[in-house]
Length: 277
Image 1 (cartoon, one colour):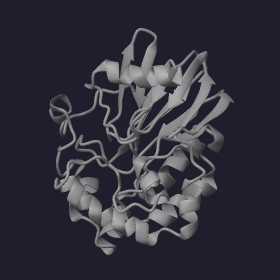
Image 2 (spheres, helix red, strand yellow):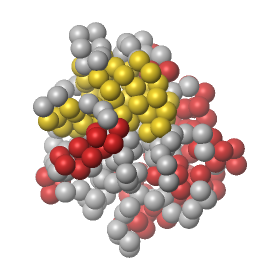
Image 3 (tube, helix red, strand yellow):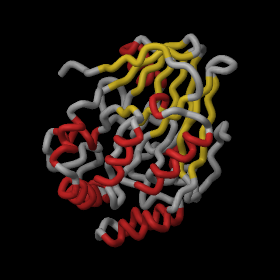
């Protein structure tokens, strides 16, 4: 299938990058406040996909994102919902804990989204490109070729290079893996802002996004995002979603590390080494 790519042209000023909203309304509301505090207009905010996910307010979260006016690409969850599929398409190992939990939250999300939401997902692109601070930037969910591919900092650079070349970009902004990181080779960069809907397995209730700034060239910084996680937990419990994921919101530690390479597993509960506000 041909990729739908939207080019935003030349962008200037601060931009806010984020992913993995995961139906976490409270996190999204806090992120919008952060954008306002930093003077970032909605048209300079981009989501790397998975607007819908583990938490308890899928339609309210989607409505808030749409009303805000930020851009988003398709995550695997949006593709599956758009195509009326019966699973989230996250590429979890069949029969794993993540796979079993996904049956519950995905069915809940599918049952609680309006019919019009499916039509909205049809309008979203697979990728976004734009020029910024003299660089071409491409936005992917997993990778250019595979929306649900898990790309981590420890992932071989050759796999990242494939997406950079496919988009003819010097910078890729990516999502899906749930962990914020920066990887760089020479003048090209792979940036993952992290996700706002779930903690990064670092023992903190805060989650992660990223601001890029062209005031002095191409600069980037991760932003820890605090939000009303207690209400998010209450909404998950109210809707009988997996308690293990509700506990992750409270503890900052993932229920399991099935998707993680060994290098990332060793980071469990540790402060992330990021350049952040």
